[in-house]
Image: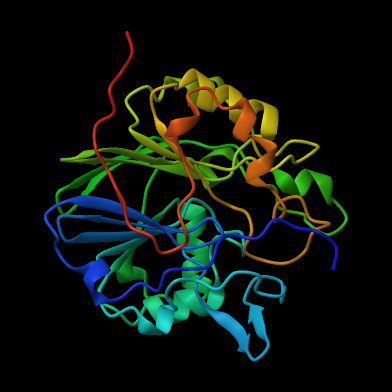
Length: 284
């Protein structure tokens, strides 16, 4: 097999991960997916946690081999308050996962384009909340601010992709909890506004080297991380689906470890591992 960095073995998520443990924690779900549990308010962002086949394990994403198993499957999730989508690409909005999670008593949140795609997948309109650019809203005691994302990857494939993402189709999400601020930036090329997130205590970051750049790319991802120098960092969007020739699957933590200032803030959790949120000490 051609080399591709693989995420560490998952730690299975049990019912305890969804209960109120009187703190705020995040869990990497593999891929670009995360879950946040803030004092019992549970939110998933971009979960792709179903399989097209279990033997052998094949992902619902482009039928790629599942390189690292999710820490929980969508069919096993019993409680969730909300699912948020940064955009509607299949490696962020898995069809099988949507069809499982829509059975729960929850709301889906995203841009108007995300709403349209969810409705095409059969999600009832009353279960979806659409938001405009830089909207703010509350889920339980978590305050959510949308951040800008620009992800027009279809420009590279004009022969097969007649629709190109507009700025209002994609977003990131910043979560204000009583224990700290968490940022999921979504997929985006670099924007100067990304450097304005100085209040973030923990960020998720995609370090893939996508050229032409419709993601941050390694160099500009490092610029964001090293500008927001006090925030803890978790690398995601890697090590999940085996397809080493596609850069959007094939990032590697080894690419960036020696380039991150204050390396002790670079966290490398297993999928499903509980990571507590706390306010970071900000250097003046």
